[in-house]
Image (cartoon, rainbow, N blue to C red; front, side, top):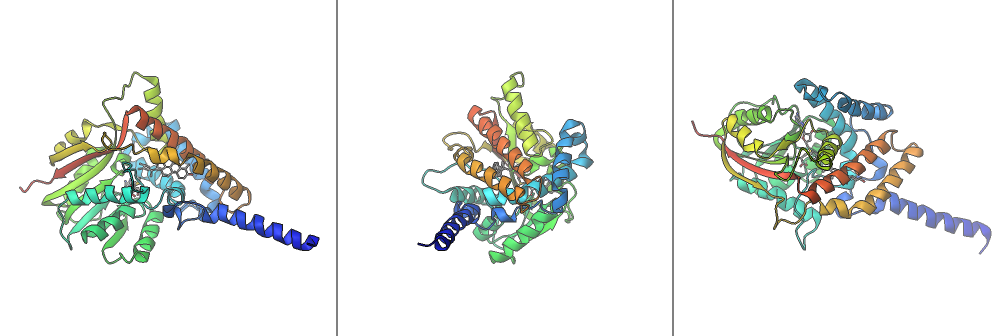
Length: 357
Ligand SMILES: C=C(CC[C@@H](C)[C@H]1CC[C@H]2C3=CC[C@H]4[C@H](C)[C@@H](O)CC[C@]4(C)[C@H]3CC[C@]12C)C(C)C
Ligand SMILES: C[S@@+](CC[C@H](N)C(=O)[O-])C[C@H]1O[C@@H](n2cnc3c(N)ncnc32)[C@H](O)[C@@H]1O
């Protein structure tokens, strides 16, 4: 073989390998978003790093994030920064679910979503609300399963565009609609929904009573609302510094203005007028650990870290994406520790009814 042929062969092998490493490798749910597409959502690429620093500045002045009016902007910035990385490394459903032996992560995710809508007793054609819908993974599973019309709301405009594109691609745009807005003041009529749900989203509200009251307002009397809440459990001890570190780590890596204890959830629901029909921590055994998926992904996260660093260095990914990825890397560890110690659950389920007056 002459040297030119040898060089071409080596370049082909190295190039092919690199292409597979960057674009091809990954589980089924990761396909669709490649590392080459990582962006800062609606933020222009030169401002990603600044916005990441701005996100952290909220935690330097913790009182800031207690101000109701500042929280939506802080959450919006967070989702501009993380949405692409979530889709690339997790899929279109931005939540956890208990592991199910013999089922893939994708199947376990879908089952967790279907459980929610099954609790709502909705009929085909009913109109239901998804408060904090992300890029619509749950919305599409729920619409396909129940044949209900789902209207999602998210504070993040980039997610609205992503969700609409996914709905269309899945052929579900006639059942699914998405609007950009704040779930603390929704652009919907009183008593207009036949049911409502939120999956790991209301934890972003500075005051849970405000989002519950708003969801209550738009629901028809007699209809049901189910939420999967992020909470601390009875195992959490505020005097224990390890516990405190884990919870602070979870709050900071997930744009949370402050985690609530699970006893507060039904109290708040009753305060806004709901009847509490059922409460259950879906993370409790015999449910299998929801954090197994995070732990099992560790090698892939290292690979992702290398990839994101190289892509930023080459100028393909915007500056700042490496920092965001690193923040999520650290968060994954805090979340796993929250699961291992049992002090935290991301799936405290509450089912409520708006009474018929
Ligand atoms: C409900 C919320 C989000 C929950 C989860 C969907 C996300 C929480 C932590 C995220 C991730 C952590 C590690 C990332 C990894 C380093 C990267 O290489 C690929 C993406 C991750 C796995 C990422 C995916 C989404 C999470 C699991 C909150 C915000 C209320
Ligand atoms: C972790 S994601 C979950 C998304 C979706 N439920 C899922 O499981 O894929 C939280 C969602 O809540 C939305 N959210 C947070 N605060 C909000 C607010 N004030 N108004 C509207 N949406 C909000 C975010 O934009 C994001 O879409």
